[in-house]
Image (cartoon, rainbow, N blue to C red):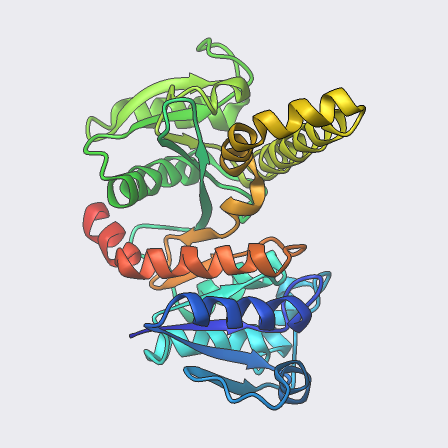
Length: 329
């Protein structure tokens, strides 16, 4: 039995999304148990009279707002749903946790409560992007660290390599830095300095710079950038994918002929949509922590939040933090 702690109050929609998502996860995974942290009255009003097996509601008086300062949250919200969720992981009551809440607060509280892996200064957010060859490209950081120095980018590369080895069973993942060009002369000082550090490490399969257009081409198994660049890139990709899906659907509805054509190609289009729909990829891991912490998009719906729960389950099953620590040592 795997136990996950969930922050019911996090995200743009709070329990209206997290509670249905948890119920769906419990119905799909019979060996899953959930500790749901949040306002008991609100949660129980959504549950109704049903008595849900393998669900434990733990009442919290505090919650952390999406626009709240991480520093203030760290000082004053020690009894919040997010903080108590993380405490459950630290105490061993839960094997991992999921939140759609304030990213900065989740970062600060995770570092404070769970601590970072030895030799790692700051955790990073990592997620997998689909690519042309059917495999994945792991990208980090996706928003935990807006500004990074060269040493932190180097650490992200080492962690990214470990994640690719654990999750994709890739023996020697190729690692690249995301840059504005592939030429050695391009990039800011931090990226150039990180490039020098990575080239000096014989234990890394470092291939140099890649551009944004290379993310889906399979040029590298791991792509490293700071959290500002990574978050902008990720949200641009998600926005473009949703735009393409919307345009295809609109064209299929344009006339009787296009509707007929749409019916003919629907099976093929559904397969493509399944591969490119961002909803199926929700749930990015904080790596570099002594515990499994998964961040869902704040605006996720119930289906997407359930995907984040599934991601957390995968990382727990793979013993991700322990294996990363072992590979780093």
